[in-house]
Image 1 (cartoon, rainbow, N blue to C red):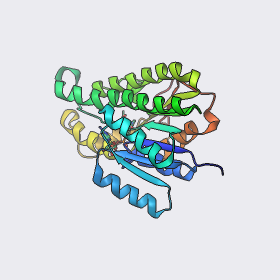
Image 2: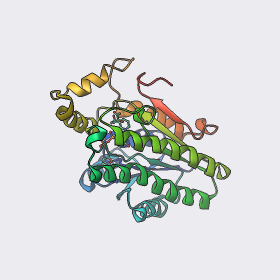
Image 3: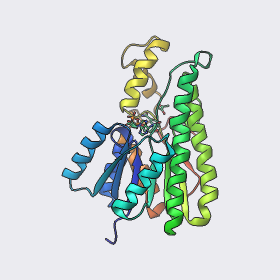
Length: 259
Ligand SMILES: NC(=O)C1=CN([C@@H]2O[C@H](COP(=O)(O)OP(=O)(O)OC[C@H]3O[C@@H](n4cnc5c(N)ncnc54)[C@H](O)[C@@H]3O)[C@@H](O)[C@H]2O)C=CC1
Ligand SMILES: CC(=O)C(C)=O
């Protein structure tokens, strides 16, 4: 193999982001992990190092443009360049009908899920343009970016925004051979769904585990998704096999939302 390509993944201390980082490491990338949660991030970095992965980490908040610039700078200082940048970090925010949304929760969810992706695209694309060798920007969308889900109105709106940003960035960056796509997972058993399940207890009158089970019943393939399932798609989007694909928001949900 030639020079190792470099992949940066936000929100990669745990959950889907960690699964993506593990897969891209197996695919031969040098890995830049990044997260707000320093403790879990450092533990994950240690585990990757113990497995022989060429890895570094950066503590950062995706809502802060200066952190996104710092993340890219850290990747370049450590490994020389950025080939793939994955805007994975996201939050579920409040679970509530639109008649009960809390303005602070709205701001928080929009900040992380929309502004975080905008600033990530900006920092990554400017670096890739400077390098002049193209690149791949990959965003975390969701089934909720393809169909609105009740009680998840604000979250759904942010994921529809990610879908739109993916279209725009793909058009603007195509002249520089930078492709921009998103992965749209379904019901993935991570910390996010543990919290969603708990928050839904209040509004749906469910017991622990019941909301997750109810949503899972809607999956044609009959099982919840794993981070590895989502990472399989991201691996393809990060590879040269996806070179002729841009501006697409691709479902990986076991058959839940049908386009
Ligand atoms: N879990 C699911 O069922 C689905 C998740 N997604 C999306 O996939 C992405 C990853 O989700 P999960 O791994 O399930 O979530 P998670 O909550 O398990 O992990 C998210 C990670 O992002 C980090 N993070 C949160 N806010 C951050 C910020 N401001 N700056 C930097 N890091 C931050 C957290 O510390 C955490 O390590 C999110 O964008 C989510 O919306 C999409 C569809 C389904
Ligand atoms: C977390 C998420 O995107 C859904 C709809 O499950």
